[in-house]
Length: 424
Image (tube, rainbow, N blue to C red):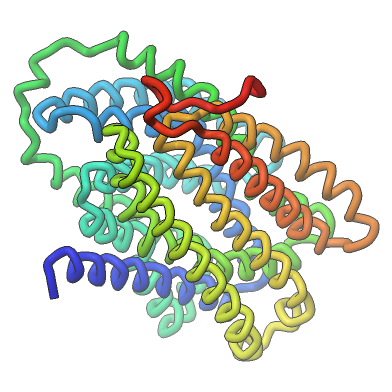
């Protein structure tokens, strides 16, 4: 077996263990904690994931392409400048986060966990993206395993054998420990980078240019990610924390699709896709897009069926009526997740070609589609209106991005990739 093949298998194994750990944790929480506690855990996790978008300002959408197309000896200076920008966003966003508790979206008791988890999760996430961008997917998977996998295994076992630790405070403490060690390990991987570039001054022009590029992206990303945050608050408002617990569990189950695709497909193909677009190599770009399409569709279809088949016996083991009572939610959630996964095919194609405007337009349009769909479906489907609206929204996203991608002109037609239309 060649080294690249071994690295890919190891990467998939690590991502698989991470995914398995998340599964174990969410099922252990569903088994050992009260449904209301599981719902609260889901609210905190979703809120942290959403606010992280504001902290990062989607700056990576600019910095990743810059890094891939920059000489390695200049990487550390770019990373320093990116860190300076993040320092500014922290100073602005973190104080505003107090409004989350002021308006009662989360209880004040969670505030002491919210801020350290938010900061460390963001740092670890940016390190993960960086390791993927510099073509170290194996180390990215190791860091991800520490960040999301190992601590979950330890916490699950500990709660299983020590009943007095079956509470959310213990879960949050284990989570915090995991992301802390993940961040430290990722930082250690950068020690070998050339430090000579650090002698130059902070490139404020580069940062400002990045802000201009990323600003539309962050608005679009916040619009899209709002769907995966608002959905939980909407479920809670409609049916309470116990039904939210079932929703959180099913979302955790369905996320196996996206997590596995990220490990086995996206992590390996998208850096090469960006590089091919940067070299204006149409043949290589088309080959990579075909590979991305085939692998994404096949894995999405297979895992969707597997999730549906295996979910029922697992829910029986939990022996909590609320989860089996709302099993129908899982069908909608799997459908929505599958459509989102397939929409990543044209998304990566557009992103690699620097066709940012279609991505931004698609994401901004998705949020009103989501709200309109919920409004129309809520009287018919009750709590199922939320995941059904997500499915409609992600289908819209897939169709719109696909239309934009088909309009992309070949690289040979001009100096820069562009859209064959005056629509944008």
